[in-house]
Amino acid sequence: MPTAVICTDQFIASAKAQAVICGNPLYPFVVVPHPIGSLTPAELRTRAATAAPQVMAILTGAA
Amino acid sequence: MIRILDPTVAPAPAESSLAKRIDGLDGKVVGLLSNSKVNGDVLLSLVRDELAARYRLREVVLMTKSSASRVADDTTLEALAARCDVVVTAIGD
Amino acid sequence: MRSSPAKLTADALSVPGWAEAVETYFDRGWSDGLPVVPATEDSVHACLDAAGLDPGAIVLTEPVRRRAVTAEKIAINAVLAGCRPEYMPVLLAALEAMADPAFTLHGAITSTGGSATLVIVNGPVREALGFNSGTNVFGPGWRANATVGRALRLITLNALGAQPGTLDRSTQGHPGKYTYCIAENEEANPWEPLHVTRGFAREASTVTVFAAEGPHNILSHYGETADAIVVAVADAMAGLGSFSRGESVVVLAPEHVAMLARDGWTKPRIREALYARARRTRADLKRGGKLAGAVIPDDETHWIHRGTGPDDIHIVVAGGGAGGHSAFIPSWSRERNSLAVTREIRPARGGPP
Image 1 (cartoon, each protein chain N blue to C red):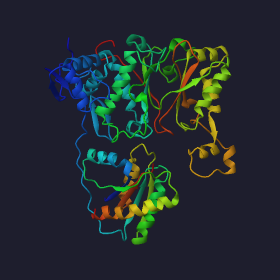
Image 2: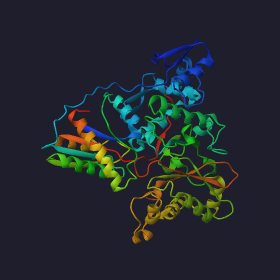
Image 3: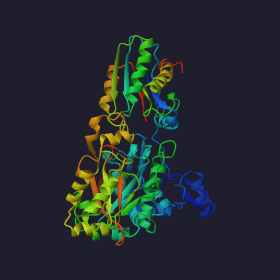
Image 4: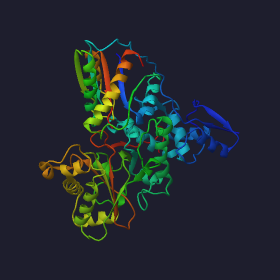
């Protein structure tokens, strides 16, 4: 099943390391700026707007 | 000369490949898996809104990991696999 | 003498001498930042003999990182850390405890929370192997404490791949990540030692592992009553920085213990009193960014305790005979994700430890 993983830029090195362990070194990630937990609703909407096109690009194979 | 030993352990070999990609989300069931950290679910809901504005989603399934520190349990993964066409997951931190 | 003749399978490097060997371990990224003791076939065989294990025996598996760690790799890292071969049964028991699902090994060694594995040693093995439970118990000077804790960190780094920046995301970490191993001062404990409270026989030797923050000092010199000590310890436990529903280790100094015992306090009473006092209002937790949301009037009278009950507070006696300094050690886990785990230290196969 196609999957898209949204990850903040601070954690991308860890995400890639885990992808290598899982045998899929080129697995693509949706990258948004850190952080998430302390954001206001407006800031979260901006993050979602950054993420959505990347999600579609990954699910359709355009990325 | 002395011979010294390597203390490291490599991961067990694994191979996985990307699943077949889709053309779009019209008529699809979208799974959302939050890692249970603060705002992870909110971000995913907002992404859902963005996707729903562009596609006619058939259904959205939201699930949450029991703990951010652990991998998702089999029940959660099996439910997502059975019900969804695609899954989007997100962290919050 | 050798009882484990099986061949080692680790890659070997030839280097001109000892000094170059030490540098090679640095260059390859196989140290914790301090010089290691180069591991040779002889020194590794000595550790395997002491453990009574074949080199290929699987000691530890970690499914998320897809690691299966053999006795040989454990022995190599034990040598690197400076362990004596006879410490191997302690390491094996600690690793068995860390592999218990209740400990959540992958999360504990990866998290931004930056925990270290606190190891608490109980029972006769303390004296047999020379573990310090007295003066400077968290500090330097004792090979058993220093190298057992260090070996666990080197195994985490080298065998589980917990390199800072990739699979160790500690925001700050703490000095206990170099080594963090104490023994209980059972001789200064008028109640029962930790391992007995946790269901083991008094004459058993055990290790307890706890994914932990660093020790928070609790200075209480002049109260001269048990009540004063309990007030000070509970206040440290209620501090916002480490406040959570996780477990607590409270390491009581012998002076404090003597005062508590003199005033008739028992371990259950201490735990109950600490649980009752170590609490904050929901309003405080919101003001301190521990909970999301704005403070509402109800929050000022809604109390939240540290932990989920008195049993979440593990009492240990350790430290020197002089000084009113105890320690509070919060769990890394904010909820129930990672719990203290105790395992018995078993004698090596085919011989006494």
